[in-house]
Amino acid sequence: MSNLVTLTIASEAFLLLSFIIMILSIRNPKWNVLLVILLIIGGAPLLYLAIDHVKSDYMDANIGLGLAFMFTWIYSVVAFIIAIILLVKKKRNHNSSNGL
View 1 (cartoon, rainbow, N blue to C red):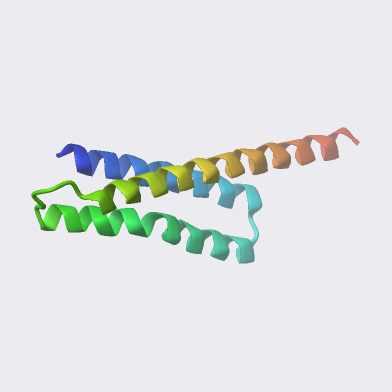
View 2 (spheres, helix red, strand yellow):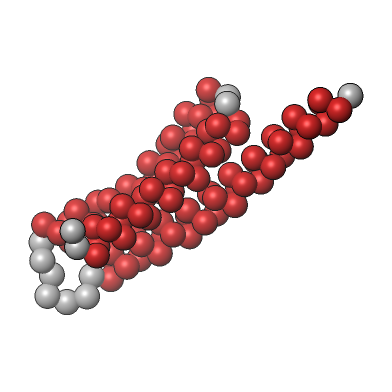
């Protein structure tokens, strides 16, 4: 497996993990639909450009692929931070309701 494929799978897996944490933290069907749409928006550019790069072997540097990786990584980090905040908030609400 090439480095590009491994890096693409790892990037998409981290993005998916972030959204799974958010979905499990929120557990609201309306919000979950929005989160799935945001997941597709975040992952689609990288998947499209990675598949395009594998199918058509470019002689020069594929700047679009690099930008897609950067977009997905930044999107993943922001999603992960939001997921952690939601998880901590849910945990605090759960603990405070048990303490009463």
